[in-house]
Length: 419
Image (cartoon, rainbow, N blue to C red):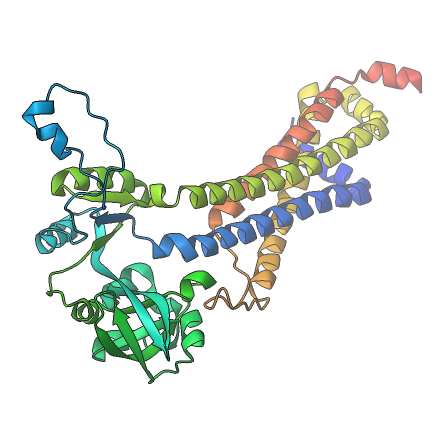
C-alpha cells in the first residue's frame, strides 16, 4: 500500500481525536521533562559531592605506614627458632614516616605516561598559640602550584590569594573555622609551636574552606618549604606523594604496581573512599529508576488511549480492510500513531527538560558548607537527552504494538454484519 496514504490516514486518526492525542503527548512530554530534570539535578549533585571528596583526594597516595615489624627479635633467636612464639602487645618497629629516595621516586612517577601529575606533601602536627591556650592543628605542606593544578586548591581558598603561600616567606593559609577561633585576619601573624617545642611566627595570607567544618577547624596549608623549615627538615623531606592519573579506574592496579616497584605503601582512591563511591552509585541508580518509571507510566497511558481509539474506530478499521488494506497496513497505521505521539511528545519533553534544568541551575544556593557553590548544581550530559529520546520512542512503540496488533486482526465482515 502507498506509504503516503498510510501516513495520511494515521494523521487523520490522530487529529480526529486530538484531545486524546494531546493527553497522551503531554504524558510523554512530562515524563521525559522530569526524566531529564531529575537525572541532570541528581548527577549534578553527585558531581558536587564528588568534588568535595574525590577531587581533593589523590588517585594514588604513596607513603610509609607505621606498623609493627613482621620479624620480631624472639623469632630471630636460635634458641626459639623451632618454637611457636606468642607475642602480645607488639609495638611498631624502627620506622619513619619519611619516604626514602623521595626525589627519584617522584621523578619516576611523573615520567609514567598514565600519570597526569604528582606532587609531594608533608604533614606537620602543631599547636596554635592563642594566649595561654594551645589549639591542636595540622599544617599541610604542599607544592601550591601543583596542588592547584591537580586538586583545584584555589577553588577552596575563600579569601586571599592561594599563590601567596608560595611567594610570601613563612606564610600560612588557615582553615576558615580555625581562623575564627584564633580571630586571625589576613595579614596577621599567628604563633605556632611544633611537637618538638619550637615556636614559629607565620603570616596569614588566606582562608581555606573545604566544606567540612570539623576539618576547617584543624587543617591549614603552607608551602612545603615553609613546613620543612618548621620541622627542621631538609628540602628532600616528604611524607607523602600524591598521584593523579589520567584514568581514575586505573588507580588500584597502579597502586599495587608502585607498591612493588618502590617498596612503599600505596593507597588507591577507591579503597580510601569506598563508602562514598558506593553512595554516589546508589544515588545515580535511584535517579535512573525513578525516571524510567515515569516513562513506563506514560507508556501505559498511551496504551489505554490507543485501545480506546481502536474500539471507537472499529467502523473505520473495517472499512479500511474492506477496501483493500491488509492487516499489516492497519498495524502500521496504529504504530505510526504511537510513534508520532512518542516522537513529538519526547521532543517537546527534551526541550522542557533542558529549560527546567536551566531554571534550577540559576536558583541561588548559598551555604557556608559549600563556599564555591552559588547555584544548585545541574549536569547537562548529552547522554541523558539521548537516553530520554530513545526511551520515549521505545516506550511508545511497545505501548502501541499490542493495540495495533489487535486492530490488524479485526474481521471487517463481523463488524459490518454487527451494524
